[in-house]
Length: 88
Ligand SMILES: [Zn+2]
Image (cartoon, rainbow, N blue to C red):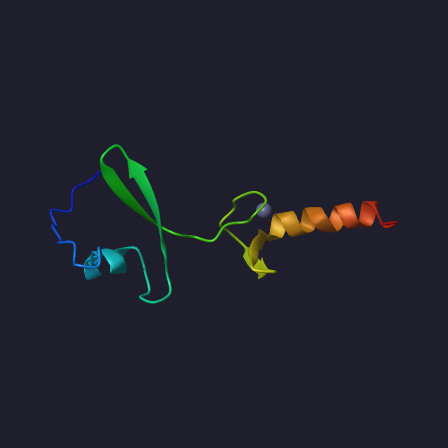
């Protein structure tokens, strides 16, 4: 883990502002993007949340369906299953 040398305070509501340069580096958009919060020993790790396929966790080529993300490979697999089981 690399130190940024940046120290930020916790406000009265428990919030910390992520420095603009870090948000820019991670290509984060305020009001839109989200972080996943991890704990590691006495550290809090923030990772930019990337929606992933509910079946295989792929990040690439995902579309939203019924409020879930599904990747093209899994859609293709479901299409094959549908064709193989045309009686259902
Ligand atoms: Zn998938």
